[in-house]
Image 1 (cartoon, chains in turn cyan, purple):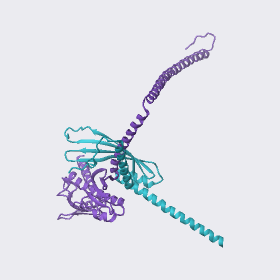
Image 2 (cartoon, rainbow over the protein chains, first blue to last red; image 1 turned 180 degrees about the horizontal axis):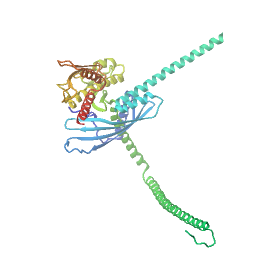
Image 3 (spheres, chains in turn cyan, yellow; image 1 turned 180 degrees about the vertical axis):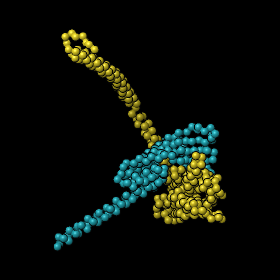
Length: 172
Length: 296
């Protein structure tokens, strides 16, 4: 069963713009799509590029197999945490099917005080699991925000208590 | 031996000769050092000369470029440049944004805005292998509804929508993503077992469409005299790719020897902790080791 490639799902737009107005409104649509996806996933991708290299076939018997190596570069942020990814995908097409495998994954992040962050980042790198990286990063940031908010809430509370205590002492 | 006696003491002449000898060797050494130093100086001088020439060349080139830029800026109409570059900038932005939209598939969720709402694409992967994608076309209305989708029928879509679709789209899609990725991972393992390790199976692999119930009979060594075991794997948690229940039994008539019983128990542990095809990879490796030991 042939895999549906993602390219088939996204039909490329026809080139040539009637006017710059069309181009601007199209840009507006694209911006809306990006805003939707960054809100949905919690991840803002700022830059992305890909290079492909067709690997020469050294095996003479396997003429029907084509191998393509893709080098991807992706950078962005999840709230205050920025990241840069470099990964390679090997695509092998034979008579029956197309297979895509991530063969190398490098995640570059600024050092933070959160050791849990570096833990799951290195695990994701080991397993070449992009989904795990993005999902964990999003949940981690959300948890940090929640913890911050909760802490702020309690900090205010304790200050109120302090004031009451001082008043009581004065009265005495 | 006798030395000619010309009035000076024996030691005097010898010592004098020795002193002369030392002086000669010293002056030789000095001249050698001098020669070496002179050679180094010479090579440094040529190096300095080369670098100076290079610097002059680069200076000249830089001046030329500056002049060219000034000339071209002066020649072109100001309005024209603005218009052209605006178009170019806009097109470059468009290409960049389209590329970024495509890149979202690596986060597991990507999509396109539609006239009705949004069509979200869910990508699946297992151990770095990029697998099938599925889509959910949502109509942005009150209530939110699914226009159409490509989610397999055995994934509990209705259950998940009932829980989350109306209150939290993000949670709905994350949950769906989890189920689909787990299914894709289980399916991948079962497919790999069937295709790569058919030699180890003594009979067909029984599987359901959700790939959460598998049973098969296998041998640790495909050709050897090893005992056939029957294994049943159940994945009760549909969001995982490792089984929750594992049973490995021996279905022979004679009693199982203690060493084989040990193996049977260890196999159960293996199936719990490693993906299915990796368990069989380790069986294959053990078999290779055994072969190697027989050869040596």
